[in-house]
Length: 162
Image (cartoon, rainbow, N blue to C red):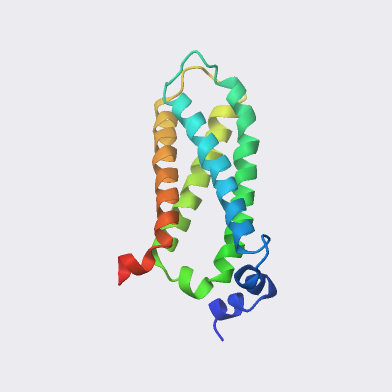
């Protein structure tokens, strides 16, 4: 038995696939959407402000939004792991899924870098964002757009590949 087959035979995977209650697949999917909304939505707000939109809104208070993004990531990670395990042999060999996961890792690394270098700067958050931080903010918007789009395309893998 391969690793993907083993994942699909765990109690959690069977529960997610076979539960007729609201606590199975539907609950994991709802938590996944909630987490992604917190992560990508709040990230987009911060990134758009970093790009210079709404300059009357100070940057310093936006630092308080990072815990919401990290909480969204944790929700997405846990629910995504459950959803992935439930259909591991179908999802993990899928190139769309692999690209999505790579983009998530890149997006999280950029978010961590922005939080550390721009918002946790010992000198304080400057109202003038350095050019490389603006580039990273733009990259975040593009990355999360593709992560969300690829996530939707995973459901249509048969139409894309066959």
